[in-house]
Image (cartoon, rainbow, N blue to C red):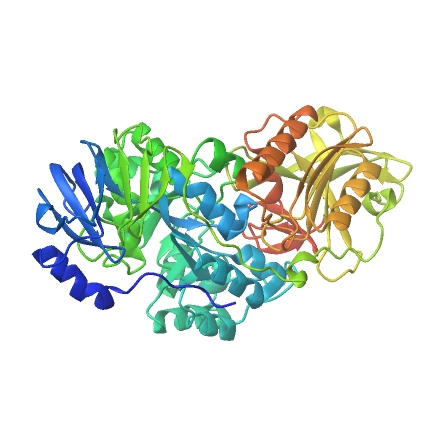
Length: 600
């Protein structure tokens, strides 16, 4: 399916824009009597009009009367602030558990009109063909949804097996597609540091295409390894968690992306680089990274991030720059979007307050797309093929025995390595625990908050199950939770205290083609079907959010008290973020980037 294009380029629209600005022709739309938030000069200018033609801004000034005719649509700003549509500098559509169309439908009422998305989740499941499906649906939307070509599938070669692998040739091909704006986050930072030929070839293909290389440096080491990574070419990074991370990145010419997602709260500890140290904010960008559907429906999207940055002490105009013009400039699109100035796409928000940022009216490409929280346009769907809906292949029906962990011969107890969940952060801790042995099997320990974790292979029907232990969820009683969202290889993660229920949860997801399920005392408490690649639903966001809400309540019923614990669950196989993870090949020590044994 070929994507639709309904917006003329600036050169194509220029004759009309010039004629409207000069008053020789009348504008299609005039937004009248607003307070112009100019993110180029960091000013608020009262009593201004914006004139729009062919979906682009033709004129901004104290009066657009000279180009307002009988056929011109007039929107009365009535003294409200006119701000650029918000831009998300780094995010994953799949994390919303929604397709691009439904994700767009969810965030448009919140004022997000531009997204730079890395579809590396679907790349791990369906390869380049899946990326193309995401790309094509993205270009069908009434707002700007750009894709980055995923760089790392697998994210750590030799430590996990994915459904498909991305090659440098794939990257080079994708750079020719109209909606690809760069290379997705380069997660294989050890590969870049070591001069891995494939990683450097992917970066080179992106740079030759004149596009932006996304970064992902998930290490606290800001010494020579960080210097080597920057030298390799990544232009931004969103993995910082403390002020020193943000400072180091901008000093080395990168953009520091500060994220507030459903579970990542990394803005407050880094924005002090601006608010207290006084660093130039031009190289700081706000993003979400991962937001699930419940957050999008109940709390917002980039408007939520901007409000949070302001609450952390950031000047509202600086926060807006970090969510508009800074982002556009980073991706080489400053002349296309990110500000309310001539020639740019007419993406405008009307709001009565810059601090609390209520989004009352959203205009994208010169037409009203949402008002007072209500979506007013269609977000077209791609015709997802059957192959994208049949991706959970277990190879056999699983039983409790597949989740049994055999103890070393003759052992009465063992010292086991345990993945330690850290609330609101992506890194885990490498813990140990003394665990009892019963009938030759190592048992989880509710008293120590140690549950079992298993990674079930689901791409090639091998029937493989890798077992381990995890701590931090607080689960009690007999329960299990399974998900085919398992960053980044997206096998199946099962966490539980009862082996039979772990098997039941895994089999359930095999039956429905993927998603999330929570079980307690032998019965299913909640399910979120995600039939597309086992990652996404093409149902409306509110429906998926309701299912996700029931899932979160079910986790709480099983004893979990973590904030947005589902995000923590889904990242337990992310073998590029320290310290300890699980993959289809075994436990992974991410401080050394090597497989390690379950028992010490």
